[in-house]
Length: 496
Image 1 (tube, one colour):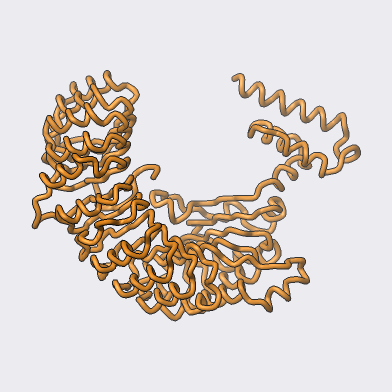
Image 2 (cartoon, helix red, strand yellow):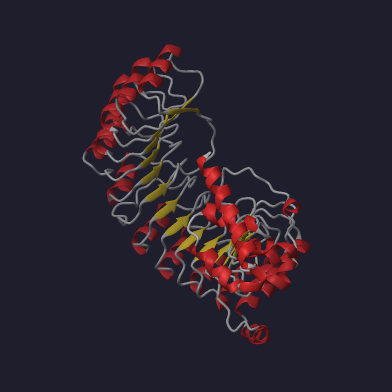
């Protein structure tokens, strides 16, 4: 009630000020714009905009970013927006005159014709996201490319574009002749793009990447997820033309160790590499990364089934994040993965270990402090995990904040007690499908884990009783118990 009362008072005071001063007669818009910029809180700014239409125009003109729907990075987002509900037309651009960033991700109704306002109002746009706008084709892309010369970040994941559209995009952005023509519009220079996302643009082939030979010198980030027609030939074109690349996603591309070797030798600043679902990548490709990419921070080799982890020894300590779900590492491979000492996030879910006995070697290696920096660990469906492994990790990884143990059926009471005793920084724990978890184990978690805030559990299939749950809630009344949804989707754990 106090905040509502304060809001009304501020609105009334601004209305009174408007009537007494005479907005249109006494002060120009520039002066009121300065007043608006001096307001610190959102409540004050909203009060300002609600006072009158003139003040609302000033407020609207201050916005530089708008977002409808969601982007492709928000993998859990299921919102699909009908952009017509938001009147995406010239009126929107007339109201928000200073827009530099616009996100239309998952606005499924957007078509090529819906992008025509950019012809008149796109000159200041720097960032544009059109993820999953399946009705946007080469025609719409040409409209954007010819109307938004300052674009430095564009995401086209899931758009229906082809090599021809990509060729037009790169030529229009970087052509010197276009820069001359645009001078008549008081646009004196073009900013070459630094980030380009072509994920799930299934029609893109190697030939579609040839414009990078001439225009890719300043590209820093490139996403080619699910571009199945991109092979080593296209990757070589990119590597030889984009020396500043630091972030590249090749998930689902048809590349091999040879293409990866060329990439690592020509692009020395690689920091994030995504090779998920590239089944032809082996330990030889990982060796190229190990030897040539000494600044690497994040690597995804999920479903690289031929990679067993034997060439991770001596990996750069800068490597903080490794996604390796559905891989076939043995004890030697895991030990080498941990040898760099810098890992903070490790996903070994669904690890195939039928040929190896990992338990004792893994426990011993972690026990000597090789994984002391781990904060996020995903061991979902790792059937080799039992009490000795849990005890070693609990003692050897004191910084753990989130731990996924879903479907680890062999964890007994001593395992749960060690988590309660040693994991004092643990905030999120996944135990869905842990059939050996009982009341005693749950209470051990409740007696320890001082920072625990969320625990994911399944409703049935384990030994915890209703009274055990009630007692746990009495111990940890601030802990939220959520239902674990067990599936095979691979996604990063929270907030990494």
